[in-house]
Length: 247
Image (cartoon, rainbow, N blue to C red; front, top):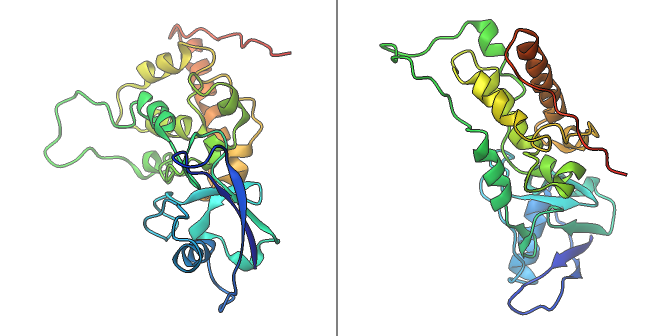
């Protein structure tokens, strides 16, 4: 198969370039990560990619595959059209080759306080939930933080320092909807303090399209907005932002 891979080493290269590789595949069920590692081991040991579990759980090996973000470890290489073009995740600064700097991504994630907030005295064993309360978390807690959605979101491209991004907002909804959390009002106020923090989402749904876990950050964002309207309707004092129009 023919592969065209993005290469850039800031210590030696003046600018990025694409490098072609051809490799014979001995098996029809190889995953893309297997092939990338074979290219690295056999043809060019300087090729760099981040990876860990190789089971589609850690999210480390998220890259852009023929123009669409995905996980290399769960992408069957035989289903890809040639030449297979591999690039780092769009919108993130490139560290080297297919590895990107996700510092800004993690900063936005941590800004939503991704943990339970509950100052009540802890129970003797655990904080219980009913089956219905637990079911509300389905579709949000499964996020593996690979960055595929945020990287392919135009609002994140244009407002990287202000818009929380699909992954961060999905996690915000996960805790807003958790019956054990006692900071729902504070979380909604925090997301409402800047019109670009939440409301910059244009519902383009690229995030839902590329999520390797089949989740829908766009649905979670809409549910956060509805919670804000509900709180406002009950005298919670949340003001709706008028989002600036870009022309």
